[in-house]
Every structure is written in C-alpha cells, then in structure tokens.
Length: 170
Image (cartoon, rainbow, N blue to C red; front, side, top):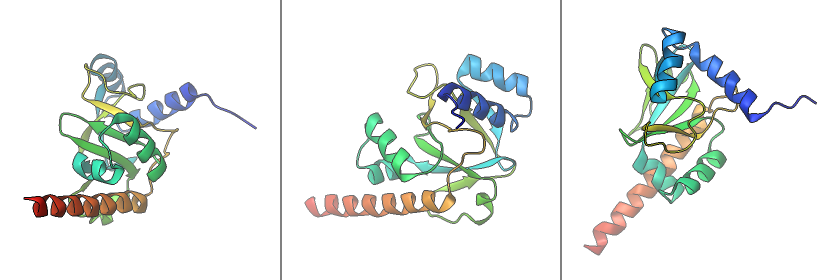
C-alpha cells in the first residue's frame, strides 16, 4: 500500500494546477508573493462560482470550522473562498461549463482566468483574500458537478425559507 503525505499531494496538485498557467514561472512567483495566481479555466478544470450566502445557508453557518466540515462532507473535491468577491469556487471537470445551468451561479470555462490560491493557503490570511476551504487532494481530484448542483439547490432553498420567515416577522 502506497501512502502519500499531505505535502506530497499538495505539491502534486500545485504542479497540476500550474499546467493551467500561461507562464508557470510567473504563476509560482505570484503564489509566493501574493498567495494567488491567475490560472486559465476550461482546459484542466472549470470553476463554479457560488455566492457565499448560498453556501452559508446550505451549511447553516458562516464560521470557518463549520464551513470546512460541511463542504468536506457535502462535496467530493476542492473548494476555495475569495473574500474580496464573497464567493466560493468549486473546481469541477472542464466539461462542466458546457452544460451548467444552475441559477445564481456561473461555471467558468474556456478563456476565463481565475485567481487561484496557492495550495498551501488553507486558512484565511491577511495577505491574501482567497484560501482553500477544502484543499485539493491531488492532481485532477475535482468535484462532481451533480454534487455541486445539489449543494447550490439546497442552499438556495434554505435561503428562500429563511428570507420568507424574515418577511413574516416584519
């Protein structure tokens, strides 16, 4: 039985992600300097952009630990949060962008560049707005689009129920 350390899987995932960079050397430098690098979606992966409010509603919390536990359980692949835009990004296979039609979300595919955090940024950092909530487990270890869609649908439903409840209180 071959066992790989978390650091080995992180390094392999980083190498794989760099295949989506226009300039690998520049992307490594951006990760080192800024904690985030621009990578091209649509070749190796797509990224589903989900508003934070939907994820928070689905998880029933805004607390970091609760979000990590929930997203690790609910999805089967990597997710990062971008605090500057208040969105979560679930990485999916590149083909997901062709058929994605889930309301209130967007699947970023071909020719879209996305600021992706370094694989080592796994908690909020004042130097970087983006961090991995669920880190990559290795190269090409991505979310199943159907699981991401289910999470979004649940979050949308729970948010609507909460909003309706607040409207009745007024």
